[in-house]
Image 1 (cartoon, rainbow, N blue to C red):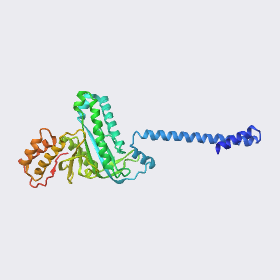
Image 2: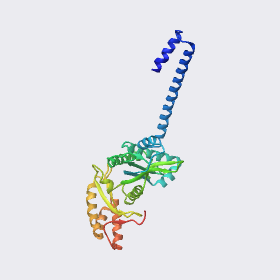
Image 3: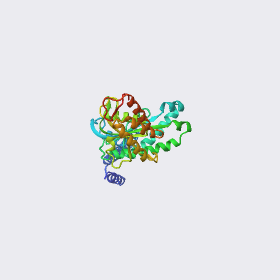
Length: 331
């Protein structure tokens, strides 16, 4: 309509049908309309540029919520599944690579992790050092959060294996990482002050996940999942119950499962069966018998080595009460 009106005014002016005052008014109106259009277009371009820039700092679902409710995101309780990864031997790697090359390695690692998480519509926390935290189920609910997290975990493992193969031999030898999957209630909120804040998840669930990840290193396995997240999988990969533990500072036991992945040993099922027999003896307090069975597996299985050594300690210092749950005194 505006274009037609402007064109009509121009024709009338050209035919000298309207008064000069009317013609001037028409031209002024046309110029005003064009200026408004130009400013609107510039605003759209600027908004898109801002969105693209913010997209480099927020995961997609969080960005959507931030833009819809800037500065007004209320804290809320959410059911989430959490994936935490941590780089192994980071100090030795940093010493060998130097600052610039270490940064390059971390960025390559984060690229693999980001790709795996975003492919499953996950959200990310800001990296802290060489740790990487992703979650599903917030800020928007996801009924299949655990399945998404599992698929992302398996994709991440493949991506990290491919990355490792591209590294120099001396770096490749040191390169390693651990993963933990956990699920439960957490709080998602603005964290910080009125001048600067971060929108993300906090709470005991995150702390517990960090403890589980550190135990992956303790047992010498790549990935551990808790009972809480394992029960949420629609089609879980073959698991192995590694242990039942109470971590430092907690009172509730955690059941820890190793998940079979593409690169697990071909005899994973046989190892799991033998380990389960030994673990059943261990739970009953038959530490001598359990130690012998674990020792037979320990030559090629890291968790068996850990449990065999524990059985020796428990034989030497029998617990007053035993329910099959081991309490860690340190983190």
